[in-house]
Length: 299
Image 1 (cartoon, rainbow, N blue to C red):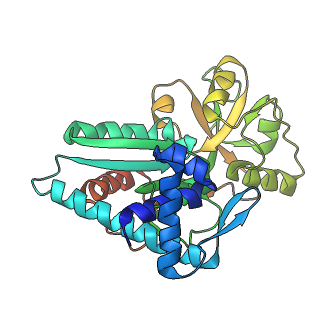
Image 2: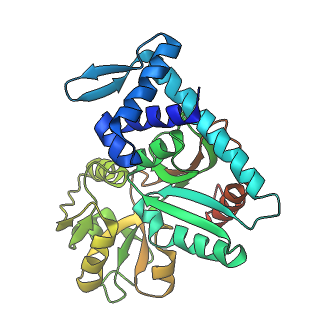
């Protein structure tokens, strides 16, 4: 099987139609159709179920998709290793992460790594947690840093830990001088929160139910960066991971307050890689730097 055919096949599997794959790859639809037809003829089976709203992988297609991702990842690995023979001078590191880690933490690690290895290029994608994992599984990201309610079974996990939430407020907020606050303290002030379909809200809402406390957000947004001006300009609060904004807190722009609750407010985080894929040298080196910037397990 040619890698071109596999690449076209995976594009259709991801986008659901030949037209969408054609637009993404900038390749004529007829060329993509021909390559898929050749694959189906070679394997003597249908790889897609043709439905009114698009194309869905058949059982055989699912098997081929897993194989194709490994084949393409291995091909990229060989090219990368050849380019890296003279040292850690060249390479591409593709990182997918949730927004909480994309504001301060990951860009800071990238900047530090770039200062030591200026020939390494980076691509950073900011996505919801489940999409981070999918990018890694599909080989579209080398590394994924994401929240997870349950340990991932479909990726290799390079780092796993559990981190508490904190309340974030402006330095002049009435609660800013407290060493620890409760959920009832949070409920007494305007709150800006992520939507209910996020890991943060799932855990927070369960903790509030356990204490019979209702926290009704004054402002809801699916972008963490949109919540920060609200907190900065009002006597409001928001909640996030304890390591989400180290630079902002370190500069004194915000105060991070530990929260006391009957039910744990901790969320699992993972650094994920594709299973059974040897990492390119640049990716492995950056992975080491990224894990070193995260809290040690048990802290």
